[in-house]
Length: 72
Image (cartoon, rainbow, N blue to C red; front, side):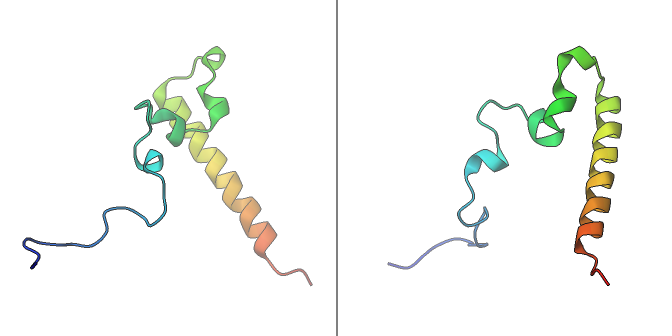
Protein backbone atom coordinates (compact mmCIF):
# COMPACT_ATOMS: atom_id res chain seq x y z
CA UNK A 1 0.00 0.00 0.00
CA UNK A 2 1.38 3.40 -0.96
CA UNK A 3 1.90 6.11 1.65
CA UNK A 4 0.00 9.31 1.09
CA UNK A 5 0.88 12.71 2.57
CA UNK A 6 3.96 14.53 3.71
CA UNK A 7 6.43 12.85 6.00
CA UNK A 8 8.91 15.16 7.64
CA UNK A 9 10.70 12.62 9.76
CA UNK A 10 10.57 11.93 13.47
CA UNK A 11 8.81 14.43 15.69
CA UNK A 12 10.71 13.51 18.83
CA UNK A 13 14.14 12.37 19.88
CA UNK A 14 14.51 8.62 19.58
CA UNK A 15 14.01 6.90 22.91
CA UNK A 16 13.22 10.06 24.88
CA UNK A 17 10.16 9.80 27.11
CA UNK A 18 7.38 12.20 26.23
CA UNK A 19 7.46 13.61 29.77
CA UNK A 20 10.62 15.48 28.76
CA UNK A 21 8.77 17.38 26.05
CA UNK A 22 5.60 17.91 28.07
CA UNK A 23 5.42 17.21 31.80
CA UNK A 24 2.47 15.12 32.93
CA UNK A 25 1.33 17.75 35.45
CA UNK A 26 1.71 20.68 32.97
CA UNK A 27 4.15 22.37 35.36
CA UNK A 28 7.01 23.57 33.17
CA UNK A 29 8.57 25.69 35.93
CA UNK A 30 10.23 22.59 37.35
CA UNK A 31 12.11 22.02 34.11
CA UNK A 32 13.07 25.67 33.71
CA UNK A 33 14.45 26.42 37.18
CA UNK A 34 16.68 24.65 39.66
CA UNK A 35 14.52 22.86 42.28
CA UNK A 36 15.94 24.99 45.11
CA UNK A 37 14.65 28.14 43.42
CA UNK A 38 11.09 26.81 43.53
CA UNK A 39 11.00 26.83 47.33
CA UNK A 40 8.01 28.99 48.36
CA UNK A 41 9.91 30.20 51.46
CA UNK A 42 12.24 32.19 49.18
CA UNK A 43 9.30 34.19 47.84
CA UNK A 44 11.01 34.80 44.47
CA UNK A 45 9.18 36.30 41.53
CA UNK A 46 9.65 35.12 37.94
CA UNK A 47 12.36 37.69 37.12
CA UNK A 48 14.39 36.86 40.24
CA UNK A 49 14.19 33.13 39.50
CA UNK A 50 15.30 33.74 35.91
CA UNK A 51 18.26 35.87 37.05
CA UNK A 52 19.35 33.32 39.64
CA UNK A 53 18.93 30.45 37.17
CA UNK A 54 21.16 32.34 34.73
CA UNK A 55 23.83 32.73 37.43
CA UNK A 56 23.58 29.03 38.29
CA UNK A 57 24.08 28.08 34.63
CA UNK A 58 27.06 30.44 34.26
CA UNK A 59 28.74 28.91 37.33
CA UNK A 60 28.01 25.44 36.01
CA UNK A 61 29.65 26.30 32.68
CA UNK A 62 32.72 27.68 34.47
CA UNK A 63 33.01 24.45 36.44
CA UNK A 64 32.67 22.44 33.24
CA UNK A 65 35.43 24.45 31.58
CA UNK A 66 37.70 23.96 34.58
CA UNK A 67 37.04 20.24 34.53
CA UNK A 68 37.62 19.88 30.80
CA UNK A 69 40.87 21.87 30.60
CA UNK A 70 43.98 19.71 30.34
CA UNK A 71 46.22 19.75 33.39
CA UNK A 72 49.95 20.36 32.84
